[in-house]
Image (cartoon, rainbow, N blue to C red; front, side, top):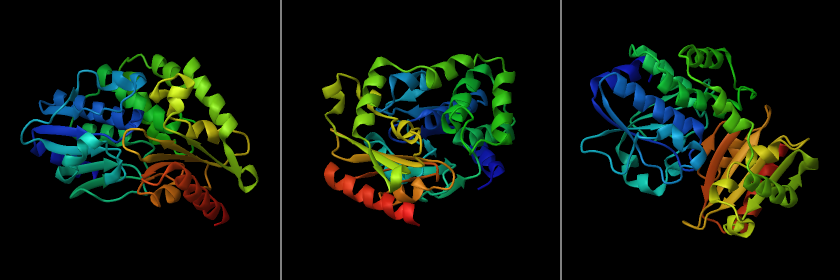
Length: 316
């Protein structure tokens, strides 16, 4: 589908329920909130289905927009979800009901009858903005907050190689509304809690380096948060930290879940390396530079499988 096709789709329906992925980041939540607010501003009924894994840090994005259960006859739309395996458990029953998938991950799995997947877009939030403009909508300061969060999250505050002219133009549109964007940058990129520092110290000590230091991975047991005296949310988002180590071009983290027994994978890489291909072997997907997946293997077996996949990727 094109952006025009999606605009027509939204115009033809009135009641929407928006789904986000497990371990929600700023782009999936920002996209969902922007779409929800945009549809409401155009007279539609819209809500974001509750995501039990949302962190306190990002809860502001969907404040007042989430519902525990979709209303009857809702039209389901997913945003920033690359695979049907990437939804949290409470959304499993609705995956087959998704009418439209909007995404920007080139390495993804088709799972909806209607799909707009634009891998040239730095973030899914940008696509949502384009569709909203196609519908004749006017961006408000309230919408600019989640939209900008989505942009900033998936571009590392405009530092990543995926950042392009359209990204900056969309950010400029956010700024033009008069929304105060500085606190978003401060919270996401310039603030590290003491708990997060504890996790980073542990990860530094337990990271394993491969391919002469060009690749690295770290496996985190389900008991880590309890052992360190931190929150579960503090343990997430470590792949970027591992990748930031000097000399590391490709990084993977494995995080064991105490809830469902799965091991969740996250990867980050610089241009020229591909973590999406690694994550695809574990039912996931994403971009070459940022991807995720999961496996039911025990943590130790998952470590071996990921290490093997990394070595193969580094040799190719």
